[in-house]
Amino acid sequence: MATYGFHSSHEQIHPAALLKAVVRAEQAGFAAAMSSDHFSPWSARQGHSGFAWSWLGAALQATGLRFGVVNAPGQRYHPAIVAQAIGTLAAMFPGRFWAALGTGEASNEHITGEGWPRKPVRTARLRECVDVIRALLAGEEVSHDGLVTVDRARLWTRPETPPELVGAAVSVETARWCAEWADGLITVNAPIETLRRMIGAYRDAGGRGRLALQVHLSWAEDDETALAVAYDQWRSNVFRPPVCWDLDTAELFDVVSEDVPPSRVAEVVNVSSDPGWHAARLNEYAELGFEEIYLHHVGKEQEAFIDTFGAKVLPQLT
Image (cartoon, rainbow, N blue to C red; front, side, top):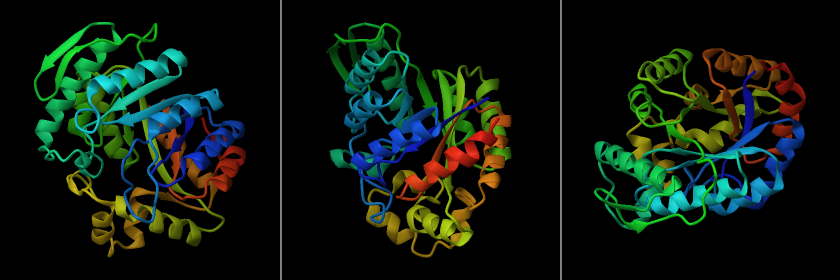
């Protein structure tokens, strides 16, 4: 049976409320959790963007859940600092923390004032960061001169067992590339055939470890409200790369999404008031081979979603 977790969306929810939500999710039967790591939301309507690493320490202490975070080292975060953050949480909570690494989005990274590199440069930079982070978590002293620079860095506090470094991918090509270095793969919901090709590309290239999926969904007491919630909160998130990578402010996302129809949102968010319908979709993802599936209700109010899915959806999952 797949593990079903709760996605903690810092872009949408105040961190204090999000902490209460993840505690409630554990009580409702969710078995794991994951966290976004943004400096900026995708829309001014979302309205939040708490610091994930501060929150993760509190969330790990407040629950017994296994947690992951999606992080983009190389610009906003120096890889040595990412390694220190990973190492500290993994040392404090052994076996309960993992990190997914990706190339990031301009909306979070432009704050440094550096230029936003082309995608191939970002990919090469991430590869360097992965090697730096792994070496530091292994106890090595690291110096490196390349797209990132490291001078005689060493982690003095480390976990006994380094946590998994998972590849974050939204395309078949990136999934294939992640197989070279990642301990697992995480992606987001997409058409079943697209997900099947991503899994195949990763495994065929020698990709090891577990497969994880973040599922964007919207549930409410009726279909009309569920779609309205998704449209309000997630219509700025319907754009394929490179748009979602290269726009650099929430205000820009709001402008370009002004004319997005609700039907387009329903293509990227699983929208329904029927718990059985949601359970069927989640079981389809598990049948593809995803071993961990993280549920992201795209609304700002989480309590009713947590309670309903705990009572009516999780028991139907295989």
